[in-house]
Length: 397
Image (cartoon, rainbow, N blue to C red):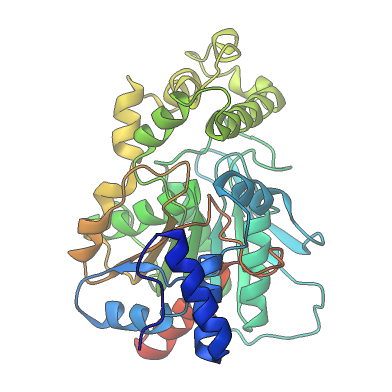
């Protein structure tokens, strides 16, 4: 007998709870807890095939979002809580235009474990205006390290404490930098399976990179990535920024945009000398920006040479690359993510290599879980479980 309440009527819910308390049945108690705390398995959208079957098996468990944390608080805590500082060893990668990116190899708190050269390598890409010390990056690094894998976080041009050594910034369209990072990892560990993970803008880069491999725009010198996870991807960046720009000033989405804009201001101030070499960049006009659309108009398009911000957004939005992906890829997103407007449900249903997992709650780059939200997130657990399933069930070519 299904004892879960079928009506939203308050009296009916009270009667149902009273009935459960009288019977004191363990299963009913668990169902009551799930109902009160919002625990439920994510909705999965996938084509029929091996990847879909694997994902349904490994993501069947329920996600229990931390109680009383709304989308904004989830996103805020997920961003600011870092725990202990991670231990990284940085490798600098010099790019074709003399720019520099960083590969930050995670060593964990205890570095006694000596891994074989064939241990899987997980390359993680952070979000906009972030770096390798973002909380969501370090949490996934720790989760991968616990599996005996080699986590390495890519730090984009000029991010964190990395210098900007050419008049070119990072963006959602330039997968050449991702390609350079992948090739350096391949040189270091040619026999290791390569896994990719990205958050927010990093998720968009992962998606476009996988699509660019299949289109022939990028040619990997060695083995292709075995699997990928893209978390909190905006998918349609134009819709995401315009949604934030339309938010009233009391709306938390307005504050989130203000934080991103402020961090871009710091980025430009720090690299003002190098960016002054960009002929079309007008720093005074840039300093008047209040929205991300303005930031992209005054900075991104000027540096990258786009005639309009609409054209840049068309190239950057990752919707269009999903259909061409031929690497097992799991997308994880929350319905209450303030940066996400539309979901690629049909695109993932038509591609046997992609799976879309949608939770009701979780915020942006957060998905905190349990009564104590500062442990491993739902994304950490799901990514590790997905990667392990793919490594075990799909032969590595």
